[in-house]
Image (cartoon, rainbow, N blue to C red):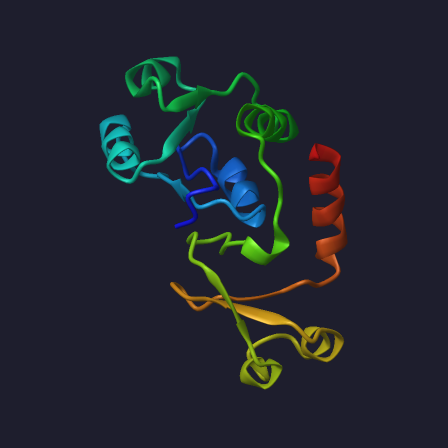
Length: 152
């Protein structure tokens, strides 16, 4: 845990937001199939800020919460960024699936585990310490960077 970076919990309405916060390097749990009470208890016990569009849940979570005003992902990201001064850090990106930390691995360790073209065209690979998913900065990374730069 990094004390200089806020940690978030998002409810089931904000799965895309959770993914993007993880890409930005923020420890973000996503409670897809949990009750509001379970989400709230977990967020408090883990020292997380609750992000939600649910007015009732936001009221229960005060003061450690942010009620998001929009259904639009870019507007949500802008609101969270403005509220907490977020900055994307590529080196701190987390697993978009499970929120685990990404650990650099030697290229040879992923041979045969990623598409051949991706293996040939990339030198840096990462594996999720929790679920084992492999990541690399492929062609899609430019569009990710573009979206994140527009938030800064």
